[in-house]
Each structure stands twice: as C-alpha cells, then as structure tokens.
Image 1 (cartoon, helix red, strand yellow):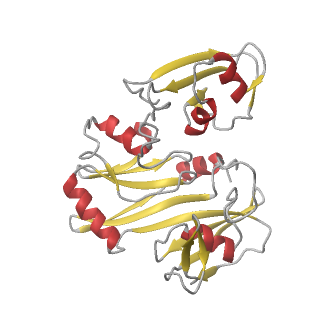
Image 2: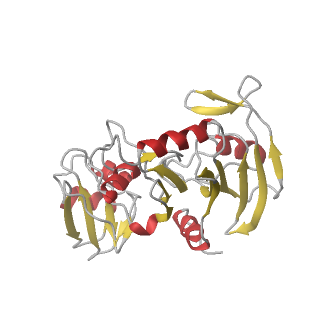
Length: 297
C-alpha cells in the first residue's frame, strides 16, 4: 500500500449512482481545480487499483480514494514492492505507466523521484535520490536511481560512455507477419518526435520475436545498441509495426493517456568491480502486460 505524503490530503468518495470517473470527481469533489489532471496523474484509486481513464463507468456504491496535494494537485506514493534490487548506493525500481521519472515546475509531487526521496527520508531533493535511466511517461519498466552524489556521478559517467545496457519488450498489433529484424536507421529529432533520416545520428535496435498472437499482439525482445530519443518507438514503427497505443508513431487512438506497448525489462551496469544485471520477473512482466490491457499469456 502506498504511503501518504504528509502534505497531501486524502478524500474518500462512495458513489450513490452510476457515473463516469470524471463525472464522479466533478460531482463529489467540486473543490478540485482540475479533476482531469488528477485522473491522468494517477491520484484516483479504487480497490487498490489506480484509475486513469476519465471515461471509465463506475457502478453505484463504488468507493474511491483520491489523493490531492494542496499546491500541485497530486502526490505520488511509492510502494516498497516496486523495489527490484538495491544497494547503499543505488536502487532499481519498477516504474508504473502514467508516472513521470523526475520533477519540473508543473509536476513537483507526482513523480517517481519525489516518491523515492520521500520513501528514503531525503528532504533535500537535489542531494538525495536522482534518476540515472529514464522512461517516457506512458512506458513501464526498470529504472535506475542513485542514492547520493558520488554514485550519481559514477553512474552518469557510465551513461555517457554507453556502458549501461537496457533491453525492452515491444508489443505490436499482429497486423504484420512476425519477423526477427535488426534495424540500423538513423534517428533525427524533429518537432517533438524522432524520424528516420540519413541526417540523423546512428541508431541500432534488434527485434527478436518472443511471443506470437498474444491476445492478437506480437511481443518482441528489443535490444538497443544506442540510446536515441524514442529509438525503440520509431524503429518498431519502421521495422515491425508501431507499438500498441503509440499514436505518435502509429494510428491515432484519441487517448494520449494510454499505456504504450513498451516495457523496460532488463538493466545492466558496472558497480564496485562487477556487473549488476537486473531482470524483470515473470510476475512483473505479467503486471506490465495487464497495464496494457492484455491478459496473462
């Protein structure tokens, strides 16, 4: 169960009639400045499950738990179960989708960095837990954080030297025959997205089929040799088909707050004379597929 931040308020709501999630917040919590932002940030829970679709129809007598921070709207409540592996210097955690890694002026509370610093008791966020690897807001999977400045410098140097290795599971709709393919397309940033271009920097991703026709989807291992922005997303769209729910590189779904079919399931880095290899367990992989709306398989 998530721990409540001391500067957050918690509201309990029991529906008297069937309503959509958005209508329920508007009706029962009129004091919320932005109920849609509260939903998309992940501050609404029911029966220990986070509700992130404003159009979800809730039955009468549904009980909601809503977390609200007085200044920024929603606080993130980190769970110990999300820690995959840790030492005194670093921690690898499972990032849920629809959660940001770090903080900015518009999101000071609902992010993984703030949740971890609160969990470990660091009051100075600049000298506490810091993100080393990053994932997009709509992507789930393993993330590496440092616990102090010395570890941050050493791990960040490994990132610059491309010594930290990451692998992913890529989930695409089964509209193309499954293939094993290695792409060498260059990636170029262009208007908030990556495009394949001869003018771009070298980028390489290898796709290996893992499971075929999983709920009408194909699941691939995606092994990256470089770390360009949106690399797996743009390479998947070019080589094996766009990731599910990725309207930026595939079919527009009309919902920009759905989990994208990309799961970071492996991390490797060097620490104190040995390689640390962190693999996502089968249980967490199934959980990530559940966040995508896919059943166990």
